[in-house]
Amino acid sequence: MAFTLKINGTPHEVDVDGDIPLLWVLRDVLGMTGTKFGCGQGLCGACTVHVDGQAVRSCQTPVDSVGDSAITTIEAIGQAPQGAALQKAWLELEVVQCGYCQSGQIMSAAALLKDTPKPTDDDIDAAMSGNVCRCGTYQRIRAAIKHAAG
Ligand code: FES
Image (tube, rainbow, N blue to C red; front, top):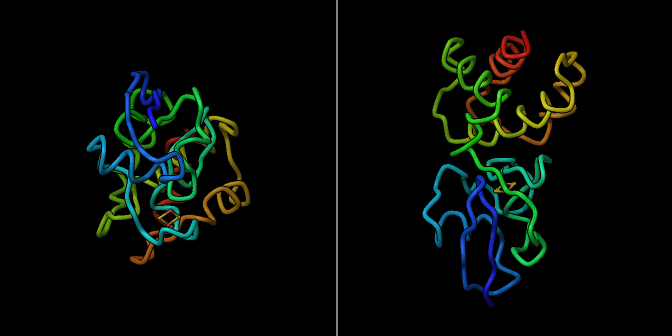
């Protein structure tokens, strides 16, 4: 089935089954591999993208559910002020260890800062609780979110 997905401001035509998760369309069909596969079950957050500004798990988002919503991925989050501030903070505070989960972490953090520009620790914990980091970079992630929030 043919879909036109609006990804990072650009329309992309894809011809796939409607129930295929958005994650696979991004990675395997369109070659946008910044969004990661972790658990495939909605539990780890590695696959987080934005749909109309909301953080969603792309492994649990059938492509036919997206419609003409605006999809944003890690490849373009730096074009948004919150995304740019977060990427800068991530580098300055050397958040990353292995790095695998970090695009999902930044996407969740960007959605948080868009709605809550000055988050409390509780706000951060609530927004980031679905993003797992096997290297345990949680304290640096929290510090970088606060740094980006200014
Ligand atoms: Fe989607 Fe883990 S890969 S939540």
